[in-house]
Length: 79
Image 1 (tube, helix red, strand yellow):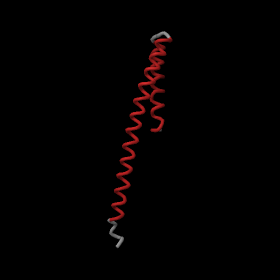
Image 2 (cartoon, helix red, strand yellow):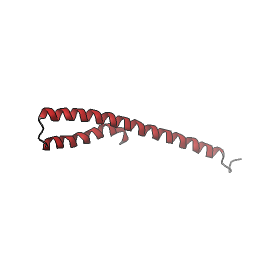
Image 3 (tube, one colour):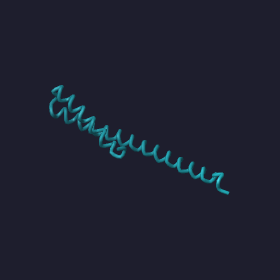
């Protein structure tokens, strides 16, 4: 799901903004402009968040892998 965050986030934002614009009875040009801006901004925000989550995940995975190797090296049952 994290890999699709940059697609899902603008989708939900555009649905919300589209509904709000519809109930405010905005013109189609105004609604279109709002949707284009919101989709673009939320795509960038989702992309940045996805990169940050992946970076944290990879760094924690690396730390866990290094920690497991150290534990195996210090295993008292091995002589």
